[in-house]
Length: 236
Image (cartoon, rainbow, N blue to C red; front, side, top):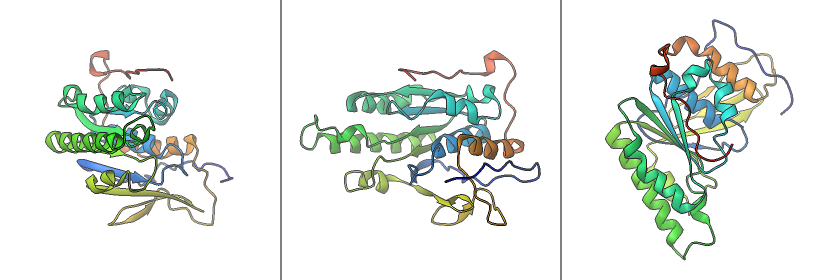
């Protein structure tokens, strides 16, 4: 959409859905860029904890994560691991228990079904691997009491196990007034804009959203020992 981003005012805090413990499936993210990045950074900032991002090799570029955080020091709480094949991706999901700490509050798995659709896999191998990964993630989220934010590359019969495993569903859709988040319980405009103003959901828009929510975030430690650092496996 055309238009300019809307700068927040100090007395206006943007509305972003909470991510509860368990699996949250975020739908319709393809039409609105950086939704998952914004939700992930917001949750980590809000909880004061740390996050683990299991990436299919393309989603977790460091620049959106860095640009979205009101403070780059806070973003140091996100660790990123990348898998480039179905076997690597599943191995990362199964290694999650070894990486979780008492501070972990979020696991992010964009396009969780993507690699298991690979034509090189045997007849039912991809479906079995996806189911194994989803079950593993659900078990980890339940036992560790952490939020797990996932998306799908496609909503179809193949990815149905992801839908069934979800404890919470969030849909993000574009409107003339900016993005609207919908859950089964409510729907909320990120910014309630009056007067028909057109809002462009660029990276700068989401940075404004999180900047408006900064009063809600805990202040992280100021020493290097308090910060984990962003760990990137693979190329940007």
